[in-house]
Image 1 (spheres, rainbow, N blue to C red):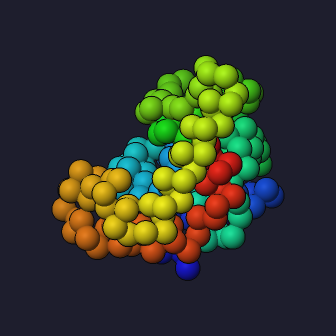
Image 2 (image 1 turned 90 degrees about the horizontal axis):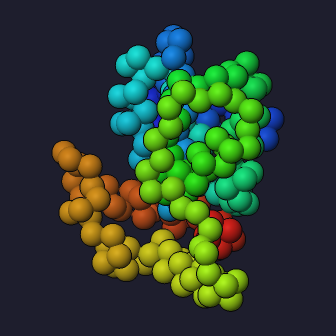
Amino acid sequence: MDVWRTAGDVEESKSKMKVYEFGKEHGKTFAMFQCTAEPGWVFKPSAEAMAQDHHVLLFIADGHDEMGTAFVSVEKYASDAAAYLREKGILHLDGLYGVSMGGATAIRFLAAEKISVDKAIIDGGITPYPYPKWICRLIALWDWLTISLATKNYSIMKVAMPPERWTPKGEDPEAHYRKIFDFEKHHFSSKTIYNVF
């Protein structure tokens, strides 16, 4: 079930990527890439704030929606977003934002796609580790295990990511985390979590 369809126009590109658009009436464009282990609706307040004077495109990564897909790679996330923009005739962005995995996607988008961007905000963009491959595999295994446990066990999720720290101001921490946990439990596959790392 799409928990916030009425918040913005949702569209799918030929690649079936889910995209929420806000403020279509504005000329300035702003694209957003989400982080891993968060449903797209967590970014709704930020998208709505930017939509006061921008046409905002919030790209939802495969495996982070209700569509039953699995996340493949940052490269695919960036190229699918660029393909969607081209389908819509958008060949220039006034702004681009990405956090964590979304930051890595924004970096890839800037490096590989031929869509001009005036300003980019990279919030903790992850990049490949500069360690031997076997160490990277151990780190990936650890990350996969911890995220897998946190998305399937509510108590572990609360210990790993304390609600008091991460709940938006004005929201009930217990209700906010329960909503995220219920989404993750039913929509994040082991394959998605593994491919993220």
